[in-house]
Length: 131
Image (tube, rainbow, N blue to C red):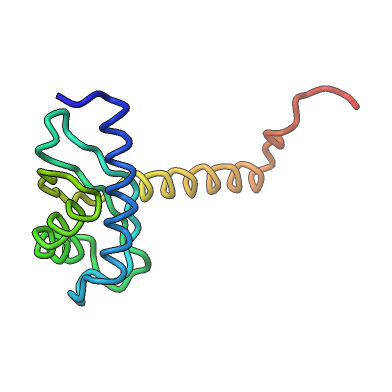
């Protein structure tokens, strides 16, 4: 069982190496440019959960995920060699929905503030104090 700090270091290095490999070596047209938002390595180092977000709207996340899954064997072997790992973890690619949720929440808040101002509501930055 690896320590938490070691798992985090391995996850960060995996993220760096996988980002480079995906951008330079993966030729699957479904993948395109992606951002790896996190890599979470299991305590036994058997599996690494790789969270990704497609850059742009060229391909839907499920197609990108299928392309990454197809390249997972190559990516696992090459990342293991570059990092000097005896047993590289199996790579499980998962679409990171948190960025999309945060964007939707921000838009909802902005719309609510805009609607409140249009209805004559007070400016939320106004604390009610006189200058």
